[in-house]
Image (cartoon, rainbow, N blue to C red; front, side, top):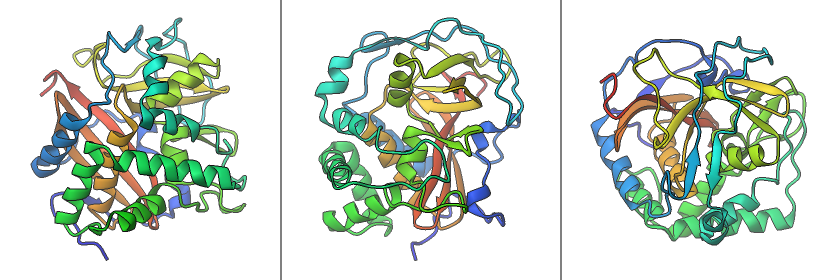
Length: 319
């Protein structure tokens, strides 16, 4: 069993993972109950500085924040649209297609059934795609840095192939999210692709590339940004955003996502947080670049149930 990191807040939740409610969907206005985790902040800033594949706001992509989204009750699929235009006004698709990790990441996005309760079937071609993606991110300085840190903490094996197997189990190993069916989900699908819970509500869907592509194809309708009060209005160059949107007719009252960061950065960051604890829910408040974030990870056995950033403050606002 991996050692627990005393610097990361752990929660012993009694309810089964299949019934976990995503914290991003909570409408609370509370302040974080824990202080900044300085050790975790330091290693995450090392990942940030090594993320050379991160796209530049205003150059590689442009977002249009527009209005502040209103309250939507959990389970409701009616939301006032405070943003007439898409969130993404421009994205340099050439970079998405030519940067290896992005290109391989995008090939994975159509490998899954949207609804939980519908068993996933993984083809031999999809297994190869998973393998190619892991090989590509393991070659990046971001993942090398994460691996070195995890080995130093005793959370991961030093052998690269064994580490790759650990990553595969965390992100791609199928499990039951809905008990009524077969193996219907995995960490990658939930976090990066998104799912619907019995066709009634959105769960997961915390990736900006998937959001852009789904918005481009008319499946996503951005409703506006989410912020606490008026002092913490986001900027269009922010790399983290709390937002409201609909996907194929279902509304996500509050979602959250990094914007512009590389796939390897997100995998590295959430892998580190996941392996810091064996509890069902792990949270940590960190300062990454100019962003004060609450990082959240849910565990589903040896795999990730969900993981996401929650923006608390940017540009030293509200600090």
